[in-house]
Amino acid sequence: MKFLDRAKIYIQSGAGGAGCLSFRREKFVEFGGPNGGDGGAGGHVWAEAVENLNTLIDYRYQQHFKAKGGRPGEGSNRTGASADDLVIKVPVGTQIFEEDEETLIADLDTPGERVLLAKGGNGGFGNARFKSSTNQAPRRANPGQPGEQRTIWLRLKLIADIGLVGLPNAGKSTFLAAVSAAKPKIADYPFTTLHPNLGVVRVGEGQSFVLADIPGLIEGAHEGAGIGDRFLGHVERCAALLHLVDGTQENVAGAYRTVRGELEAYSQDLAKKREIVALNKIDALTPEEIETRKAALADASGVNVEVISGATGKGIQPILHKLMALAAAARGEQVKSVEVDEPEDEPWTP
Image (cartoon, rainbow, N blue to C red; front, side):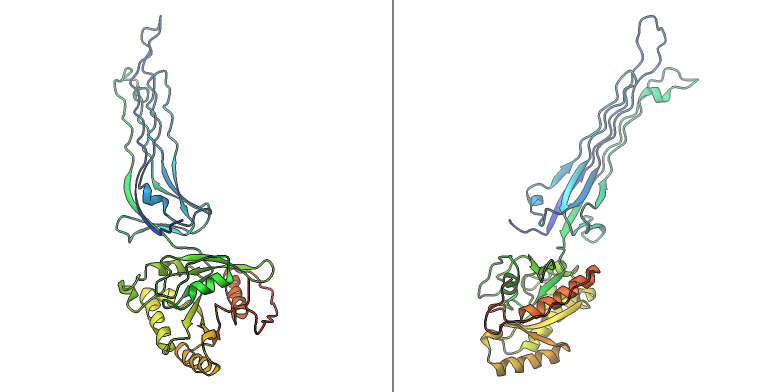
C-alpha cells in the first residue's frame, strides 16, 4: 500500500429541496386553500476518524465529494425527504485545514471522532406556510437553501508512542525490523526510507508500544534539504524519541547536534520531548572505539548513552524496557518491572 500523508479535496453539501406551490383540489370543496409541503434538507458533509486506515492514498484518486440535495415538497402538505449525510472516513491522527493550509479546522486524534465540514441547506417553505387571515391563497413558495462549498487539506500525523529519529543510514529501519514485525526497506545508502513506517513492539507479557520510523534528517531539512522536515509531524504526538547515532562515523557528536538542530528548528515542543540516545552499529566497532564515541556522544547530548546493535540485537532488550516505561507513563498505565537477562553472544529476537 502506498503511503500518502497530505491530500487536497473539494467538498459540497447538498442543497435543500424547493417548497411546493399547490392548492387543494377536491370535489365539493370550492376553496380548498394552499397545501404545498416543505422541501427536504440537503445532506451534511462530515469527516470521521476510523481505525482501519493508515494512509490518505484514497484521496489521490478521488478529490471531489458532494452530498445529495433534499427532495422538493409535494401537494397534500407532503414534505420532501431529507438527503443522507456524506461521511468522509480518514485515519486517526488526521488534521483538517482550510485551503490556506494554516487555519486548523479539526484534529481527529480519537477513533470515532467526527467534525461537520459543510452543512446541508434547509428545505424551502411550501405555500401552506404563508397562509394568513389576510392572504388565504398565497402563491408563494421558497426555493431550498444552497449547499456549502469549500476546499480543505487533509494532513495525517501518525499515532505512535515512540518516534525514531537520526541521520540517514543511522540504522533506524534495521532497528524497527529487529524489534517488530514491520518489514521496512533496508539498504546501505542514504534515504532508503522514503515514507514513515510503523511497528508494534511487544515487551514482556501483554505489553506493547507503537514505534514510528521516519526518513532520515540532514542539515537544512527544516528549509527543505533532502526529503525535508515534512515527516517530522509524524513524531510530534509521540511520548518520547529514540535518537539513533551511527557509531561507524567519526564525528558522532556532530551527527547528534545536526539532528537536534533540525528538531529545534521545526518545533520547540518536539525538541523538548523525552529522548533516549543510542550509539548504534557497535558490532562494527572495537571496544576502544565504542568507549571513545560513547563518551563523545554523552558530552554532546548531556545524557547517558545506550550502546546497541540493531543487526545483532546487542543492547536492545534494556532499551526496549525503557521505551515501554516511557510509553506506559504517557498513557497513565503501570508497567511491571522485568528483570533483563540479555545473552552475550546470541542476537535478541522479538
